[in-house]
Image 1 (cartoon, rainbow, N blue to C red):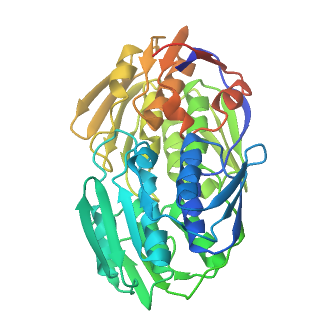
Image 2 (cartoon, rainbow, N blue to C red):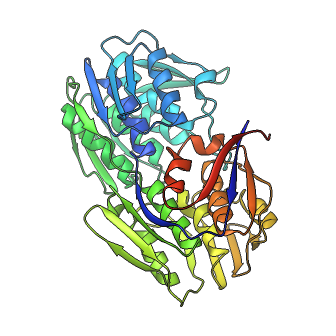
Amino acid sequence: MDIYKINGGKKLSGEIHISGAKNAALPIIVGSLLADGITTLQNVPDLMDIRTTVKLIEHLGAETNFDTENNVLTINAKTITNGEVPYDLVKTMRASIYVMGPLLARCQEADVSLPGGCAIGARPVDIHLQGFEKLGTEISLEHGYVKARTKGLKGDLFVMPKVSVGATINLIMGAVLAEGETILENCAMEPDVVDLGNFLIKMGATISGLGTERIAITGVKALKAVEYTIMPDRIEAGSYLLAGAATRGSVKVTHIVPEHIEALLDSLEEIGFSVETGKDWASIQTTDTLKGLLVETTPHPGFPTDLQAPMMALMATVPGISVMIEHIFENRFTHVAELHRMGAEITIEGKCAVVKGGAPLMSAPVMMSDLRAGAALIIAALAAEGETEIRRIYHCDRGYEKLCHKLSGVGADIRRVTGGM
């Protein structure tokens, strides 16, 4: 398998163009199944999860063409020939459950293998299933599959027992073709949800309340295929800003929506970094007065759980005590053991990580456990003296497009080589 070799200790400096948002592109690609016609999506990142999703909708009967050089994906979903999604297509990616909404809306049935994804704690699909049952679906679990059947989805009120980005996305896609009005309460407010909603509205859906806790959807008879541009990836943008901060460099990320990473920018300013923003960019520069801070992950507009691990890598370099509290997932500190190998002083107490920062990080052989933990190890390696080898880098292939190219462009000494475990 491939590994990264990173010679750290070099300040990153320059601009990085941010790709389209993976977490918006995945449901939008699946949402194209709701329309009979050719959908054209711009700014689609070339990532492993994207390619898996393309294979998934092809399995269902869609015809696709992915121009990876220009990041344009065309989808012809005129005919859906299959309502079953097997385990082989979903075992690496939890977002595969998103097909349930479009399949139920368009075909009235779906057989979806229980999904996989990052090993960062339980991600039950119970809220998805409860919501679809409220909209008139019969659900059963058989041999590892969720089997869903409906005689036609009907609008209703569903209050989510907890905020769930995935369930919000899935239920919106099911409700756009349902009979009558659907009210979803306690919804996720993430930009990815809003981007999907804007895509569906362009297709002809009637949706209000996007970006709030209460979303109303009035079902329509049919949707039309459209052309749409995926929003920028706020997690990628945040990761590169954190890399610049950890190396005490000067990094500018472009083609972004600064409001999407406001919680991160506020935290970086609290540490003491100099942050500037423009219409579609943000930059960071180091100062001489850095200090630790307290960060708690919460649903948007709070600090995103997907930046928790990368932020902890930065915390390890900042003098003083920092505290990270993870409220979203119960097992998202798998990167800590690997950061320990690089000299980080981190103590875990339940959902709280206490970081005693400031000691120099050291190169070491380390291993990714999931996508965002992988980003944390890369950031730590960029800040550490010496050469770090990072294994299982396929995790980062799921969420960071052209990672080596982008980091090399701002002065990182990073190579992808064949070898390792």
